[in-house]
Length: 375
Image (cartoon, rainbow, N blue to C red):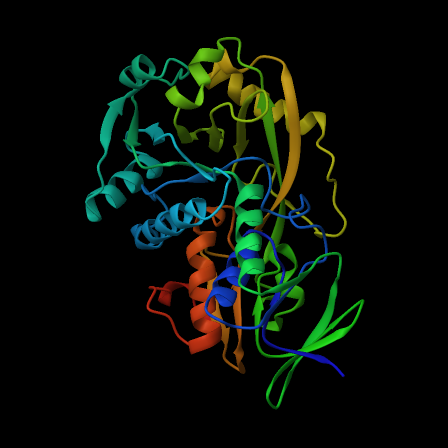
């Protein structure tokens, strides 16, 4: 006999663990399938800190989702013995006429968010770690911060377990197909049937959704931790998370947390399109030098000896916006994919809306910009 469930979640990382938890707490008999460990460091939901910000320069349309995500992270934190969410404030900085500062200001103004505008000298006076050129500006928003991704995944999995979910790690999904009354999922261990399927497979999502095979682009990302020469400048209590637009690209970073070092990265790093099953996972000196040169120029007091390097994956869409939808030809299948390097902060609310789509076929959350057929 093939096991039968109300819903199967394909991929139990940051997004999939949230979807599994929301489905289970609504009373669904749910199975989560994960090819690696729970949690693991092969995808996009690791690295000890993931940014949370309400001042959303990419598009003000993300702000309502971010507000709901914050409520759900607080709720999950209250239900676990782990701290998940650290509010440090957020800084978006760059040329006064640049896209990042303008976009951040626009989101704050449109949604009535509290914020301050700081010149480069005012920013350095308040946060001495910065050394930005004259003429740069910054938007400071006090509600930003960071999440601990591994702890968030574990928190959602524990909530799912308490609600009766079954989660199987080290079990790789081989294929799935629609049936007359739901879906059938084949793994390298067994086969399962369900009324509904939720695909949250990260960089592997295009292999399970034909409409996204040529749309989703996995990209290698690298991160660095540098030991500050002035440690007090980069402590969590006095150094907000940040995005910085400079001629070298757009960079982001975090205060020292949990392990030694100021953490930072460059969006789209070296623009390396990769096969998620076959790429250089071990960071290289080239990765290190790219990030060190940036740190020495703009955060010189944070550019001491290297403490750590790590790789992860972005899964990009052509417009860098998410895919949150059901499949037109198989409406019993909901998809969350293409988070383009800025999705983890939304995992809590994406889990909620994917549960809506799976169980109700619709959601009250504003997801029209994320339709699968827009490509």
